[in-house]
Image 1 (spheres, helix red, strand yellow):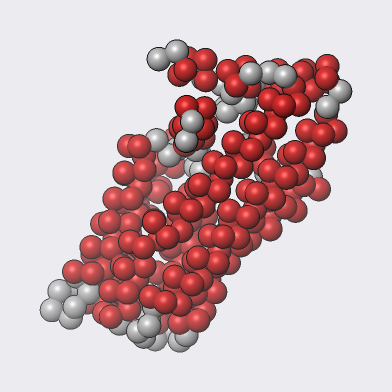
Image 2 (tube, helix red, strand yellow):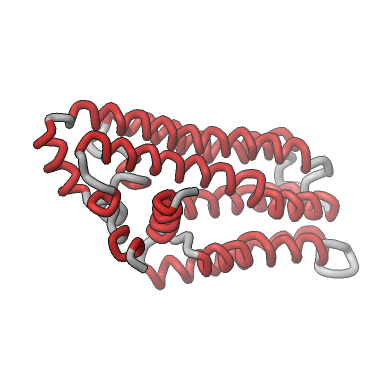
Length: 255
């Protein structure tokens, strides 16, 4: 990465609650601790498959609710990711209680549905007054939007900028479709045992660990790439420099 790309990645991460401390905390609460509980406590001589699954789910649930109450808001992707994890565990609980019987393939389908739906929503939002690309990339927290608008009007490049936003939208959607595909494949490869069993909990624990390098990292790279494409396009269409386009860049580049 060049310095400018590093600044872009850092800024996007900060504005989407992905600072280094938040990343570590989220990995601990949503992956590491639940994974250890599922891995170490699922045997019958400890908590057992059902109770260990419930305890493992309660930890991210309580943290999510605490964070939501504390901040008064939540990140859309984090919320959907949490719901997705909750549903995975919920299906396991229902199987353990023999309320329903869900085949492994449906766990894989469920894993793919959430990011896939977000990707579809991102594209569909192009027909609305405020496409979702504004929430992810083109917003006042990251970019000097009003300054960019004024420069686009002055240069007469507003129409070309709208085309650029559409391109960025499809790149953002692609990151979620990638996540959907990787979610499905990871579930198919890892989950083999009967849901509700101690072996299934072990596999679910392993899948949680793998989700970070296999799914989150590639998707984040694509999202940051989309922001980089948008920034470079804005610079070309407006004649503004990097510091004028991106908020906080002036301060960061001088440190």
